[in-house]
Structure formats: structure tokens, C-alpha cells
Image 1 (cartoon, one colour):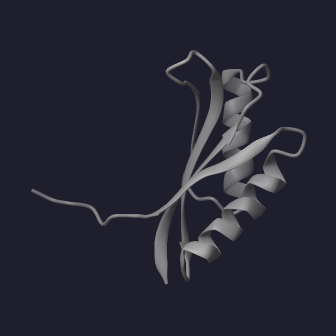
Image 2: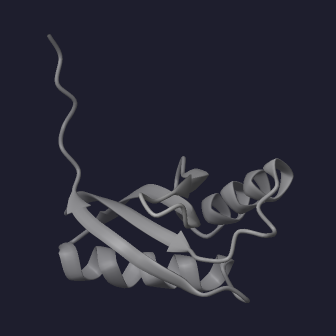
Length: 95
């Protein structure tokens, strides 16, 4: 069992008020994504997207990807979405 950082995106941002983003955070938590980050982000070309990041416990990369897709499929029902990254979570570093 490992921890994986899952990043997803929703391409449509017209609905993305602060209240709507807070609601999306709650929906992600309810679907099994603990302590998610949800924010509007612009890329280098000026296009905006809603970026979601959360950490999942999973057996391996494929299981984390499948669970991430399941979670985003539950909360982004009427939007075009994508998983943009699934990487192993690094342990905290203390200095």
C-alpha cells in the first residue's frame, strides 16, 4: 500500500466561484479524497482550468489512477475532466 498524489482538471471554469470551489472540495472529500486542494489556475497561454489535487492510499499506480477517475467521475458529472498526474507521494522532510 502506498500514497499517491492525484491531480485532475476541469476545463470549464465559468461556474468556478469561491462558493462553487468550496462545494467541489466538500464533494471530493465526500467521495473519498481527503483534504483536497481545488483552485482555478491559468496556463502559460492564458487558458484557465479548475485544478484539483488530493492524496490517495492505493496498492499501486494503476489502482490510484482508477480510484482518482472514479472520484472525479462522481463530482464532475457535467464537465469535461481529466486526470493530469498520478505520482507517488514523498514523505515529509524535516530539517
